[in-house]
Length: 112
Image 1 (cartoon, rainbow, N blue to C red):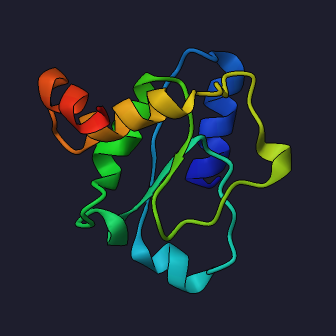
Image 2 (cartoon, rainbow, N blue to C red; image 1 turned 180 degrees about the horizontal axis):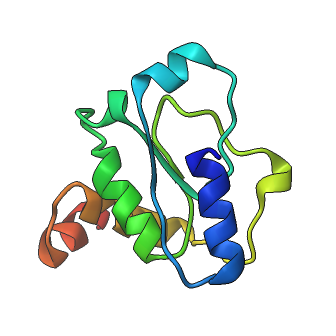
């Protein structure tokens, strides 16, 4: 069973469970067209990126929303979850500031 399938089974039993699927580079190379259904997916090759995908993944898991690190293809349309939340543009902007490590005051200044 793949990690993606395991997360799907866990979430069927308990929708409050928050999971992050961490995939290794080898997974991307061996199957570059693999589409992951897990709500939050981070590729190890992206971890050092300036967008700080691991931090953004943690925030997404906490906020019951979705996140895909830059090199991971988007989820299929049949991968939707009852827990998917639509965030406003402003909320996404604020989470992005937090993911960059800004405190509340710095985030407020950044957001105007």
